[in-house]
Length: 82
Image (cartoon, rainbow, N blue to C red; front, side):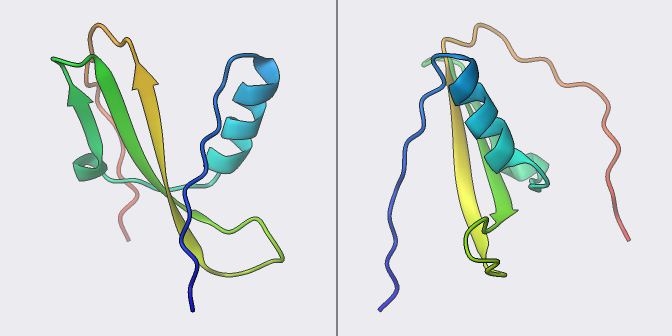
């Protein structure tokens, strides 16, 4: 039986930001997995990352939620396509 669970990490200080940064390191995303909910002022970012526990080679999907975002501006980005 596979256990699925949700974990919430809140960044209210520098330590919380460091933990989130560690989890987001080397993760990937696509433009279709980035959403801005203008009415609610929420920015959502879905990331796919490797498991950091026990050297497992499984992928984990994480979602970063940013609240109270007034505006979002898209800039040019470079895509790593093979």
